[in-house]
Length: 110
Image 1: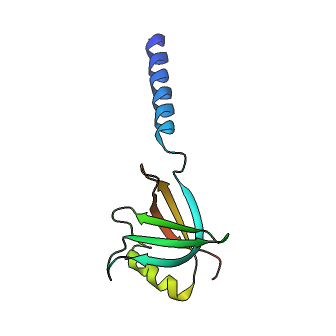
Image 2: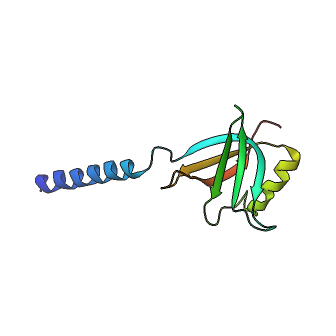
Image 3: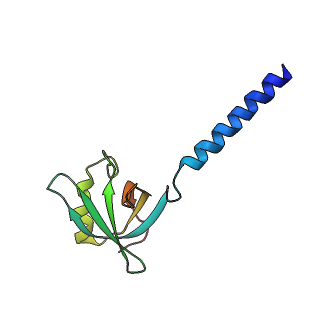
């Protein structure tokens, strides 16, 4: 019985290790900045660009179904006008593209 228990612990430990290593190094990264561009039609967002606090632009492709506080992602267009910064959480896709997985208002003002 003790040998079976040790084997189960080993399998669980290896599973946790493998799952932990399967996430890419950029999973869960965040960038804060102002929205400077939104591409798409009136109701959809195909890509958007954030200008970070160091003056660099970052283009994001939203993951499928991404919402902005439960509403349409097209709300980002208002941020171009108001200058209110956002925080984008992203992962890096297979081709090196930045994929937005969450977008929220920043606590700092623009």
